[in-house]
Image (cartoon, rainbow, N blue to C red; front, side, top):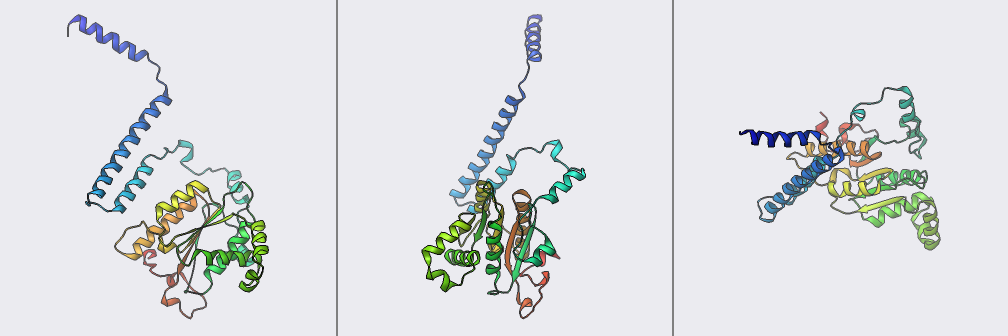
Amino acid sequence: MSKRERDVYSALLARIRAVEVDETLVESYVQGVRERLQATRIALTALEVSEGRKDWQNLSTAFLEASEGLSEPISEEDLFVDTRLSIIKEHFDQPGLVWRLKCLNEMMGPLRKGNYGIVFARPETGKTTFLASEATFMAEQLEEQDGPIIWFNNEQPGPEVQEYLYRAALGLTTAQLHAKIEENEKRYEARIGSRIRIFDNAAIYRRDVERILDKYAPSLIVFDQIDKIKGFENDRDDLKLGQIYQWARELAKKHCPVIGVCQAGESGANKRWLTMEDIVNLGFVQ
């Protein structure tokens, strides 16, 4: 370079070094670039779906990957569990949701965020009745600021499940419930109201669940039935169920306790006490 060119560049570099950068503006710019990049990937996948080169599930997956790619970075202080005993005690001092059945309280204790469990039995043996009893009992423990219990129903008709909740909350038979419809409706509204919300759809997809949970911030999640949640791909049923169950565990850690309902296989027929090996297609545990 000539001396004049060197002087010009030196002056420019000196000005750049003197600039005080606003970190918030830098973060905003970088986030904007990331968002445009993810949007481009979604758009290209959508184009391939529209041309028949990919199916709709690929687009759903692209949305999920984009959401994960845009998630907030983990701060250094959030990386590890706090080692202070006082913090650990605070976790166990949280009240949680108490079961109606005394035996479950004695064996398992209250349900708290991070807890995930499954209810399984042979068909038509009372799984929904049991859950309705426990869910209505837990709903009455919720405070005004708490989120509702979200019940994802892809099994029997929604009105039938709602009737289960009516009977469990009011302690009535079907005949007693229908004998005084307006009166019982008011009693249910006073005791439960909208603290239990049933999402009723024969085909519930993973994306539906995640969207609803993010919107309503529930206190308890019920899947009836969890094995039928769609949006998971695998050639083998046992591996697909493994993906579903792992996803449910992650929901419990992120949102609130999760209870999933599934069926016991033929090995559970005419057995009083079932074990994990009796769950349908549970080969992924091995």
